[in-house]
Length: 217
Length: 217
Figure 1 (cartoon, each protein chain N blue to C red):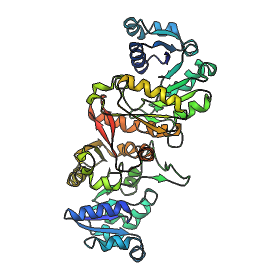
Figure 2 (cartoon, rainbow over the protein chains, first blue to last red; figure 1 turned 30 degrees about the vertical axis):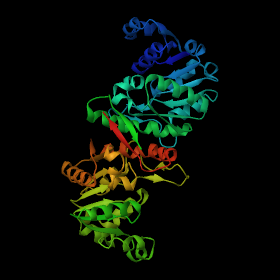
Figure 3 (tube, chains in turn cyan, blue; figure 1 turned 90 degrees about the horizontal axis):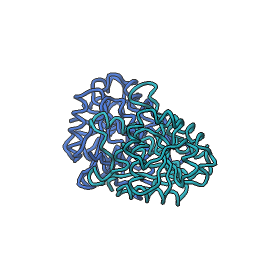
Figure 4 (cartoon, each protein chain N blue to C red; figure 1 turned 30 degrees about the horizontal axis):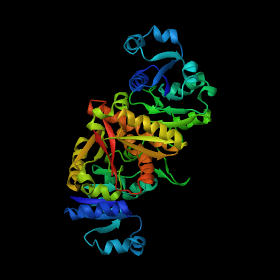
């Protein structure tokens, strides 16, 4: 599959490296290619020559599946730069969290309760097939879940398009996820995003980011 | 221990029955004793003669530990009826969720993100020792956790008073809980309360309330 991963941070790098490793054709999208190449990204890129780098628009235009791995506050701007026409009809896997660090730690959420970042993205790009997933764990576990309890923990998917959720679920299983829970339509992303404040507090207590929740039933 | 359980609903009944079974002296507090005795509560009370029934104030006055098992929207009024002087210096275990069903299902939260019901209660009753716990699971699992995966799931405690958290933790362990996670000060109750929207959606998918999350680490 041709995959565009929007965002050059640790989440984008983790997803790009893992999907490339699994044989997909992967391009990372960035706002400014030259600035990214001149920055900290260069060291990672040198070890991942199989992953391309392009503008948001060029990366998205060529992709079958687009991953939003930008920071939550920058997501709408990044997707606008990618271009609605380049997202239209495509699966848009949204892994971002709308975290607000303006008041320090712990962060609050910029949208919550009766709305979610995923729904905002869907409203702004009605022809994309938005699926929320993976936002409830650290980047390393998103793509290598088996390293914790041999994968005996849960990941959620939310979305309005059943086929798009099937594509994402298949990708998650290829990463090693064993318990993919379809929460329902995209409004269920509210629950997944509102889990993050608890995650942040657990992170503060457990002294590791390598943890996840399992839905025991 | 002398325990007052404020609230006559399923959560109050479950906690009252279980603590009485464990040998505590338990009184349920209600706004109107006569009305409660004339209602659906009577059938339950007939099978639990060891549990007393009194006004909010009388129940709280006599207790060493007070449980807030009222509905989230009615909690401040119920605790006001119990009386600040009857809560002063006591452990106040808050298990309520600030659910708003006014727009139907799924409910939203009336307070969230940068505040929580637990913190509101603490601000209103500064001399009570508020501990948030148990609000992240169904009543039956609160008090009989071993019936699910032999107790291999997690429960959280949040509070500003270490001794009060110790008392609550001991109570949780006596119920059968095996993984009590101290999230930190009372502001961490925001995370525990914001987990509830995800719980509600999982409940809609799993067709049972007998599930819980485990923090796998």
